[in-house]
Amino acid sequence: MYGIEFYDEYLLHMGNLKNKPDLATPYKIEYLKTLIKDNKVYKFISFQEHSEIKLKTLMEEKIWFSFYKTLNDDTEFQINYKIKKVVSKTGCSKDYIKLITNYLTEMYDVFSLTYSYEDYMWREYAAGGNGVCVEYNVGDYDFLYPVEYCDKSAIDFTQMIIEAIKNEGMALSIIPWVVKNSYNLNARLDS
Image (cartoon, rainbow, N blue to C red; front, top):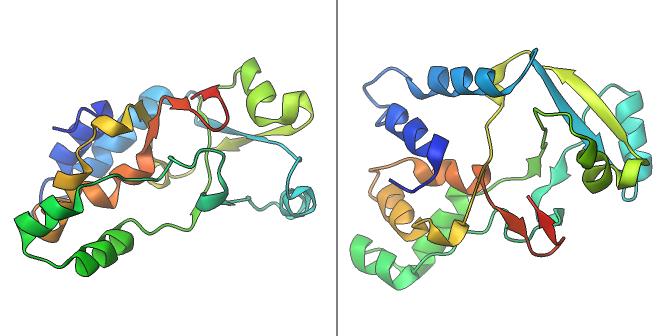
């Protein structure tokens, strides 16, 4: 479908939810349970930026969400599409397509976790060992979504937008948030 391993199957399970039971959520939860060991996920935290807020958040037993536009990979939630093709296939104006695409892909905050405790995470995400790692017990797997690492330029966001506008698909409502380029050019990191 889109060449996004887990999410191709997830979207098939999702189908058209109007008159069907939700088959995608149980599929996602079972998949996550194969990845997450002992119901534990981890958050590596650096205090290089926003240290006072992060410390206060931890002391109040809350979690720190990052504003998605401040993440170190500016391609993280970027979608590239051919607006002229969308206009041609849908009959909608450019302004409407921009509005609906922004609306369908709007997001505010991100809380990224890892299911694997690895030593290199200290270096990459916790200021070379000068940060902390918080261990969380998973209470509800439905709040979690696995991230797929792939070449985002190979994903046909143009077709996703066409399907979303024609009310023929739901991929655009989730795919931009759960796919990530395998290599972060800005931070020069292998994701």
